[in-house]
Length: 582
Ligand code: PEP
Ligand code: MG
Image 1 (cartoon, rainbow, N blue to C red):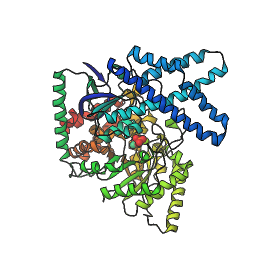
Image 2 (image 1 turned 90 degrees about the vertical axis):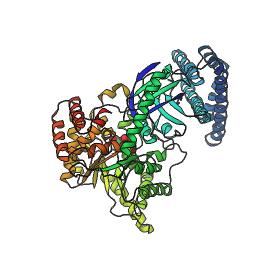
Image 3 (image 1 turned 180 degrees about the vertical axis):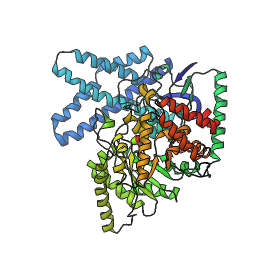
Image 4 (image 1 turned 30 degrees about the vertical axis):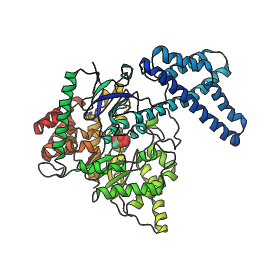
């Protein structure tokens, strides 16, 4: 039995068999040990992947030789030769047998050895072959990993997924009926993979550095997503203990769900709109079952992932209309495409950048690819005729993006008008406040929009200079850092000073102690993962607004995030001990 501590990102407890899933894309794979009996199966998987990769390359070569001539298609001939290299094939089989490991690890290890050897050779031609090996290697690895997904589908019963990394698109394609929890070696609390864990409503722990090497397929695992704990091969007393903790969690969740139809109102009658963050329109039922008053953030980028073509206007229109109908009369805030950072779509060629979080992403991408942007805006506008919709732009740095986006929105409006298609002419427009410049200049920005929504996941990342994906610096992720609380306070005051409402849709409000702080700072709307809403509602219903205001003023005066968080936790305990103990 071995216990690991990571970052709990989606609450609940799961106990079951582990399934190790490699996500491809990198040659740095953790070792997956296999038993003696599984060795021949791993060799067969490797050989199947070789055949599939060869067939793919032959297909590409055939297509290209017609289009761009022999010379370029010869690159693929070189790729085929690599795949047919007996030494390489035998080396991989040797590693599978000798080290008793999975095919993808063995292949990646051999490829890494080849890189080393080639880079030491003093011959330019051979050095250039490294990029061929890398290309073909990635293709083969992705076939092996893709095949793993098939292996997962065929696996009998439910599993807990363990992976070095799961991309948001990998996570979005997990089947909830098959996967009861997941854990990854990398990632932080606000990475999109973590956020998807909550939207799937399965326990998840990330940032478990180097755990996969310690695992074997089908080991028994406990995942405690509330406390960020993973236990490998627990003894029966530990299983019993976690089973009863799991039951307590279910009981508490059931009790909180009873608040579903009650308003998110403080004891002295201040109503906070408690809305939900969603990634897919089919989450409407979860918004309603958890008592969400509409959708405060619809992350539309998942529309563009795991597919071969771009979503059409009609398809998007139907999705936005469906969600609007489902949560009617409440509103739905549709955030326009926010790709980049950690979210990519294979159909869109967003180049690999040195600093993807600071790069060509979100509204910056949309303002260049106005074709894609306008299609989305037309879909939203059309759905705004029957539905209560709002538009929100991500990654706004200042008034420039709002004005540039307005031009394209106006073009879309004129087009629809000319085509005689109805839409809401006064559809509200909002800016996400997630870049420090937007918060600092929120007084000028407030004149250009109808609402603000604080995207604290990114705001914290940019203000504190911490990559939200990086588990090594996750300890610096401090929502109550004085700089963060001050910027939130400033944004709310500037918004209210210009008579616009201010919401918050970052993950930090899922913590009831922080929800109290936001209420005290005067927030009008809190939006969070549906599964987190009952807890937030309970916190709001446990406090007086007048007390929350006083608490927020005191929290603003602390010099460190730790002190102000401890203070908020203490105050939460005074009003609702049961939430504070969680
Ligand atoms: C945020 O940045 O806080 C946010 C809500 O958006 P996302 O997590 O999708 O970046
Ligand atoms: Mg963001």
